[in-house]
Length: 358
Image 1 (tube, rainbow, N blue to C red):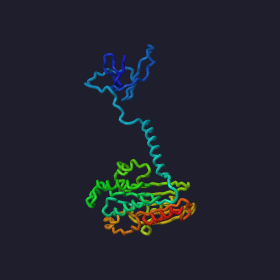
Image 2: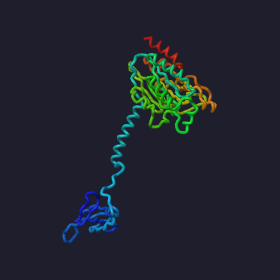
Image 3: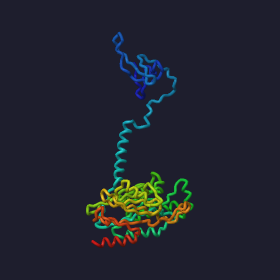
């Protein structure tokens, strides 16, 4: 009578010798039912070899010349197919929920009346060509103006990585100082939105900006772009579509990419982008719904740029922090609903006046 080894998938006889397949001598066997065709009526166990798949009644005794054996079966290093499918279904639900959240993020505005949004173009806070006095002066204006909010279109710092890290030698701010400036700037304002630009996403999955903003549950931060639905107390809403860049360029129209996005389907009140370090503005109307959309291509706070000089790119920096003044009492087809002012200081004065007209 054969006995199954309790620690392995093998069979041994009464003398303790390993039994194997008579065809290939493999000890890797399994029971394959009993043979009922014997004349004596005796039922004899059959065995199937897992290696050559032959079925035998009589096994051979393996005079085991091995000096050792592994008593346990090697554990499977990967999940089973069933477990993989369950995990992937769960993972997809999580990713899909996140995607739906960013497709249109709802933001409840808690103050009545007119508000303003300052749309910061690429700050590049660590670059020698950036005027930090201008940048932080605008931050102070926003903090001191009731109803004024801020959004950022990306490229908060140079974030030189890889072979580009050599460019730190061409600026006076070190890599460590760059992140100190970045953290200070991000904590300076309660941002309505933050977009990760191409310089920002160079950090990869270990995103320092995401880490800096980890405790901020009000700011919508995402790489490449965000889309907000601002819900006002009077039950109206305004959609803001902010990306680091939209596809499309034109030598005749610096706002081409943004306005193209509107004409190709984005029916949002405010559509804005940065990245190109040039300014552009267009107002478009959807003939079907009457919705008036404002297309804003925003320049950078980096006013001196060796890269632009080397390529001979023209200075098209007209505004780097335009403000969209939103009056929620007007309908989508009324040109008073949104007023765009290129200078944030002038916009702050206008906003104060508008809010005083209650």
